[in-house]
Amino acid sequence: MSRYTGPNCRLCRRESVKLFLKGEKCFTTKCPMEKETVKAPGVSMGRRRRKMNLYGDQLREKQKVKRQYGVLEKQFRNYFEEASKQKGVTGTILLQLLERRLDNVAYRAGLAPSRKSARQLIRHGHVMINGKKLDYPSYQVKIGDLIEIKEKSKSLDIVTQSLESRKQRGIPSWISLDFEKKKAVFNTIPERTDLPPDIREHLIVELYSK
Image (cartoon, rainbow, N blue to C red):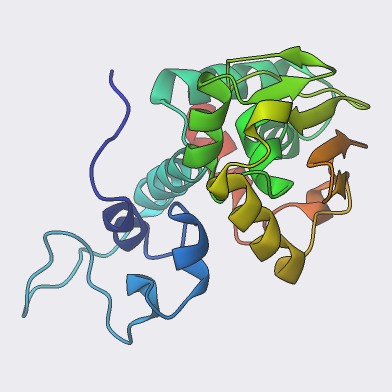
């Protein structure tokens, strides 16, 4: 299955929530989700969405989280299976595994304006882990890992502009960032209270546990 390459805003409209897929635009009034009336794709005037049942809610929550973190169905299923094997709350562990992806950590640290942009920077060899180039976005970042932009790439506009924007919004408590050197350290695995509160991970666990 190939990765989705269509309009990102269409995905947000489908899930009726901002997925923050377009970087800085998502924080401005230009975001289509800021409109008073936002219709789901394919919903025309005079037509309403069907009322959701429990399975529909579970499916939509899974799709929302999968799209938010930019992973494919098989990858997402593998994360769930790995989470279910570990001790602790499966839903929380699932979110922690997604948050520990290198592309997500680079995005959270402000080194890229979106997870998609972070994936591109990583694949093109602009990101280093502990002094070594790493070109796969799914790498699970470990406590103490140093994530930095390669010296020759530190002047890239996308990196500079992203960091400037991030100064306005701040950095998650579980990441420390050196704005000048464009380096971030993954300090600790985030707790559930540090993660997006609008995610209902228990619905995903229920869906995959059937």
